[in-house]
Length: 500
Image (cartoon, rainbow, N blue to C red; front, top):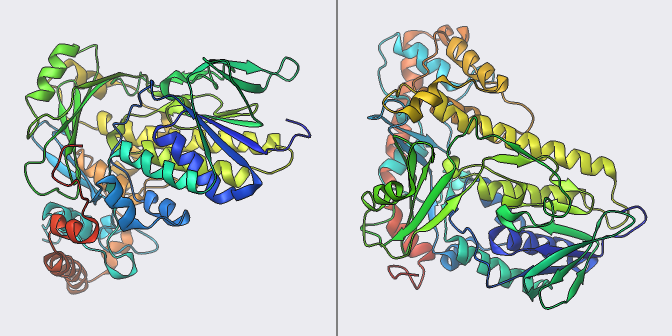
């Protein structure tokens, strides 16, 4: 792109990824760049990723989005974490919360004090020291001063895309209806020159953003960026999603329920509940999977099942020539830890930071690709942990997961924690130390030792520390209102209780 200015940015594809990109770029760049989004109403979107993680709160604030308005428009509820059922031995449950557990010392995390306390007669569960976790299981929520409760959202992804479309168009983005027939390349440069629609219209641009989902029409279909398959570590390759009527007040957490060939999600919104089954087709066929899902949902089924097939992995170059892949076109990770929308927003913000109006620097492109890959590798390892660290041997699927070799980066983290209770994170790694601690201990990894600083406290000092934290968590959780009532007052949607 030597000597060319990025004046005309073309977003190929709508849905959550496309409209998140168009909205953010239009709001940030203003008149400095023209944003055009091309999508076809004849092409459906995946639209099943309805659970998010806390960085979306910051993302919305950066774009000046009013939270209550956004939640009302998307029938959203609050999310404090994920309840995992049956992942360790088939009968267990543990909670991965968004908050901090206890109080960390600069030299050692709270888990070291808790582990030491167990040897001194303090037998309260680790869970009791986390406000988000206790509040979630009690069905409580409220905004607290100084961001005292860390949260994300459950939302309707279709309504979210519509909300973002209105915002993007208000900020000057243009939408063109049409189905992409082919991608035209510049014969000399090899860059993308234009998108040619079925009706013959050419949409020229300087930079193209591929939000065409699994099809990856631009980044792979036209530019052949390459794909690394990670399914040998994450073998699930199929999903079915359905929506059901709510049977009670929405809870402030997602559920991930393991079964003998994968897992099932349950995501409560204001107006309905999102459900889905993820599985490995080597061990379960499609008809059996559908029967299993429909036999394990609550409430009336409102939609026809949406079937998906996927391959977990990452595009080798997510920015290649004058094309940037965002969303499913850049890679896929199953929604076990609700990272899909997060990866979209990370890519968009990273692109905006690296996007000059003048010549595009190849060093920026290389740095973008390296950072994108690092994000996905770190999330990949966290997902693999859920499958690898298991005591389940009750099915071929779980026996395969338990026996598989894992990446060295994950093996090192697991070994370090098992021996010392330490978790070392690199750079801007997404999941905090407490996330790793909750999942590793929840999956059955119990450290054999802990930091010696924990032994520095006398019995009285340790009791005062642990009892004080538990008491504060208990009292604060008890003071919170019911989540459903709070949502209704704060951002109750007109369509709440009705099928969308």
